[in-house]
Each structure stands twice: as structure tokens, then as C-alpha cells.
Length: 403
Image (cartoon, rainbow, N blue to C red):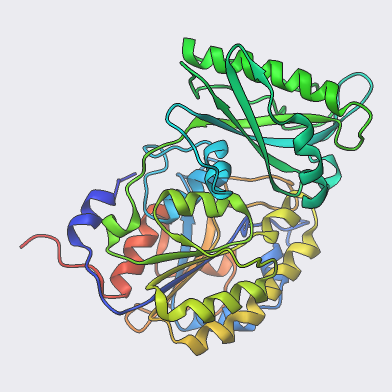
């Protein structure tokens, strides 16, 4: 994988052309039965199909073939950042997403409220997907602890998710998760890979134990799971690399977090539906030349194993495409960050369908936006990190390389 950031910084230029990148989280799927359709293939998507017919298509890999990505690296690679070089823990993304005012040396982790049985085994990793309002009621119960001079801050994020920030001297972020990633098992002990991270792990284990004590009897949210420990990274901004004035329109804080870390303006207008996200796109369209529009529920339904629900969200997005076309952006990119097949109920390694629509793309013969159709597209199979340079090129925002 090539790191395009230095080359893009050298060749990119500012112009009036506009790019809109629509990312359906967890878009890629699998057929429910041999010979069947994926969620995207089952969805009715006349507008996306028309975009595919008028553009160029292909498949893309978030990391490389065979590697299953988390959401952080999958999104960073979409924006042209080598996800191996610029690895960010989900805790740091979540904290940035809610605008937590961090200090040097802070370590963040992402937390889930979960359900534990009498034997301490996880019966639901997401506590029945409790609503955000319930999460906000519960987080004060486990906020403000202190262990060996390390303060622990807990803030609600969305639904069953919260963020934990550890603040003290000599902490490290190279810690293993406590989330076992499956039910029927107890939470794992947090371990650290170096002395500083071992100090963080000891505090984290004390926090988890005390949180369980304080939440006892509050089913379904009577325990906590943690993952994605990390310090806060310093990232080169998109303004520096691409000469863009970028904006993020998203519902979930994690995606606002990665956007903030790379310099995007994040719109916070209470959006909760796809239609409301497109309201913001229309209102802000004159103010930016790059828009990242994130659609979350394709991933949520995939993780729940809800094939039909995921297909319906794709149809909801398709219905908004005429509003996008009315704005006349110079380049439209539609893809996903990673695959979340309802069949697997988890992220997977499957490549993503990709379409790029512009006045200058070399159109292929594909007339449908789906995994199988895009496999025959003119872009072939490319890494995610190639998408941003392609979008910039189609927007005529890249100079020639070399003499």
C-alpha cells in the first residue's frame, strides 16, 4: 500500500470544483443463500444505478484483500491516509467525536454498556441497544472515579456507547480490549503491552470492576465492555494535503471524530435521518468544496443480521440522490467504509462496490450499483487509499506528476 499523503500534498491545488463522498457504513454484503442476492442487490436503487451507468465503477479494499477493518482505519483510508501508518483507536475517535477537551497524555477508550448474567457472562454486548437518553442517565453513575492518581472521565456518546478518558502521569495506550466480541463469555482482562500501558490496564480493570458494582441490578445495562484504547494522535489535515475546505455530515460521533482529527468542519445540527443529512448538505453546499456524508444504519442493521432493514436503508439513501444531483457537484463518490453482511452480523473482509461520477470519468459498461456489477467495472479492484486521489483528479484538482 502506498502512502499518498506526501504526493497529494505536492500535487493538489485549490479550485472551485466540488466533491461529495457518500459513505454507506458497512455497505458490502453477502447473499442469504447460494445464488441469492446481497442486501445492495436486493434493494431497489434506480438513482444509484443511473449514477453507475453514467460513471465508472469498481471494487475497493479498505486495507488489503483478506483483512477485516475497523471503522477507524476504513474511514482514514477512504480519505487517502495509509491506515497502517495512521492507526487510531476507537476511543480517541469517540472522544474527538463528542468534542472532549483532551490534555497531553490522556488515553481514551470506547465503552459499551452490556448485559451480564449471574455468572458474569456476557449475554448482550450492546445492552439491548439502549437509547442515548438511557446512556446519558447511566454514565454519571460510573463517572469521576480515581485510582492511583489517575482520573477517569466517562461521557455518553450514542445509544449504548460511551467514551472513557484516563488522565494521569505515565499512561500508555497500547492496551488490549475487554470486549470478548461474543456472548457466553466473561469480559476479558485488560492487559498492557508496555509498562506505561500496563499502568493504564490496571486502572481500566479497576474501573470495570467498580462500574459493574455500581450498575448491579440495572439490567439490561449492568456491565461495561471496553475497546480501542489509544492516545490522541496528531494527524495531517485535509486542508494541508488536498487544499480542500472539507465538511462532515454524520449522525454518529465516531465518524465526526475521525473527521475532526483530519481537519473537517463537523456539522452539529441534530441530524438523525438521511433526509436531514441532505438538508444540511443543501444548506452548506456553497461553503465547502468537499463533503463527507456518512450513512450509519446500513452497518447497524448488518450487525443485527437484519438483511431487509439494511436493504431498506440503502433505498432511503437512493431516494435522496435527486437532491444531490440538483446541487450539481463536479464529482460524486459512492461507496462504503467496510462490508457488514447481515449473514455474518459483523465487519468482514469483502471488497466494497465503488462508483465515481464526473464529467471526466472514463465510463464503463456497468449499469447497476452492486457488488457483482461493480466487479466488472473500469476501475478494477483498488485500495481505498486510491479513491481520494481519483476524486481529486476527476475534480481537476491535481497537477501533473513529473516533467
